[in-house]
Image (cartoon, rainbow, N blue to C red):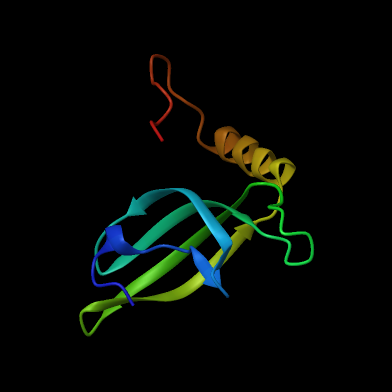
Length: 103
């Protein structure tokens, strides 16, 4: 397990092939409990090709000097991501003159 938030990753290699390819990550909260949103693609083991982009939101807790995953939620499609985004913007609309958060 990682001792530093910046070292946390969901990249997964099996038999010298990258099965889970991490494309990006966004640290949402830092501290003894941290939340990270990962953008990734997963390889189809039969075809060797990567599927559509997906998102995983994961919570980690730091214990005994290292971070351990406590929970996760995967956003499985662009449609689901857009629906979540639309709901959040409806609940938390931007104030006049307020800009979108940088990614």
